[in-house]
Image (cartoon, rainbow, N blue to C red; front, top):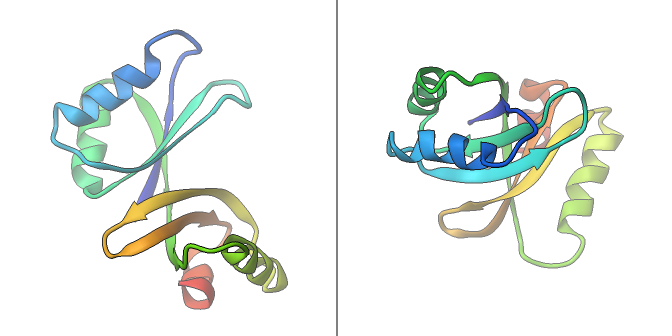
Length: 125
């Protein structure tokens, strides 16, 4: 999976523009977060279809960057996210981005972007 970090202006309606571009191209959003830190606000998106997401965002004129996402299935109970975060820390993995996403057949899943995707997948995936 890939996380798309879409750079938007700090004005009303930008989230609507991003999600509408994806909707018009039948792209299903699996995870969504926003970040207003730094020079430009960012809409962070994980979808079911990387190619369609990339094409839809490009056609709509959005600037974006991509990152590999590791998806870790979680049991829905207290402490599960802490276990993943502690394991990553003990293994020396820096978590750059994290959010919960829905995943078919599981109560929840954690989407992680780390400084070493291959190693994270081996250790956490």
